[in-house]
Length: 442
Length: 100
Image (cartoon, rainbow over all chains, first blue to last red; front, side):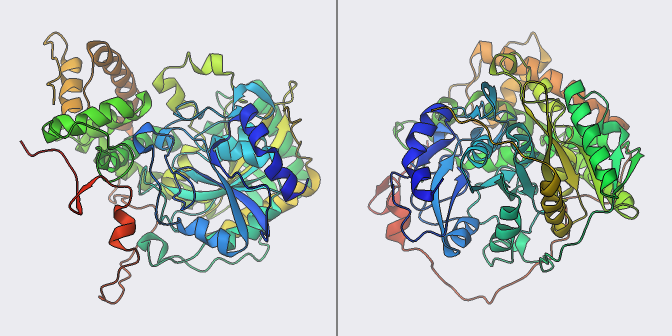
């Protein structure tokens, strides 16, 4: 399919799959070298940027996020902004105010979240690459559910300038694509030091020299409680790796059980402070009653325009930072993050990567998702959260399909700054694993 | 803001009402009930942290971040006009509610 064909079909595809919040009306790619899309929490000059939230309706940024600017400079045409859970708060992209993306393999199922629209676009559009953002698993989860490669670089590798904050110490911009060659091609384009983002300023150079993963450690804790179809596909994946002369060793990592609560405390603490800026002034919705006092004015916007999960996380994050609770929750979570990083470093002293399934089940049906409680949903992130908490780079590799043809993914985690091994693994894996192209329905 | 309705029957409900007020959210009675229940479940699950070992360090950032300073030279990348174009303004000031 040519780029012109892709552009001509966007409207029809979006009617069916709802991957975009906003997309181009252009049908001529012009002199574009490639087409790309970006999650709607990355600012872009030519599209409204809403983070899946009604409170930002009407926000037209005056600048491009650095990652978007760099892809444009490399000849990319931004074709649209992808649907997402509000501010990244979700695992299934069902918490979006602007349409819920549908899984390309079964439209009654979720694309995963929170970069669900990006994974959907990457799965459906030929030769496409999409920018996603991961705070606690928001690239690998949807990549797994949609059967595409998803790469999250080390925290600080890609500038966060223009990324609308969820959790500043956790947010990372990543790439999703059906063809892993795109990861290798575009990671160097978006990576690097940026004077606009001090967290990007301390990184060592990115070198893609073909370093290989020769041994993986599989935490016992990660294969307990996962569904049978995921377990089968994962074990087949391990067999294939062994046939590629990769050593596989099971290890105990008890620290992993603390990662999930620590992550949710840090993420919601940071989110609740970041979201304090949304109060009906400066950007997004500003149509309030100025005769109200400022407390009532701010509260009216936040009450009317934040969604249910956003409110839940604001309440949780505000609570865990309150005097009297801070030491028990926030301070402890910061210590657990160090424990988890130490645990990873111990493993990396003897192995190149940690390997787990990416998600404990294949993509669930929307009808089942609507029955899940908040804590049940949070618990489903237990495999994707640890590398996000630790800031270590990670990769979703499609590794199999269940009997119904739904994708299963496995997640490689390497040490800080070692994206090279992940990019090489994706390329090697793609030589022997046939990534299925979903049958697109108009 | 409209003060949250607080019923003194449940400590959890009172705390959620207090937190909501701090966070500038107005919750209905039904929402107070629902978020109280949700937060109780979530915090119950978080109790596993009490068993986690202490660590001498605190992970404010997952990787080491050092200050990298630029020269202290004023600069402006965007014109004020561009920045204000979508903001509600009054005589070139950003418009907001009255401070009462």
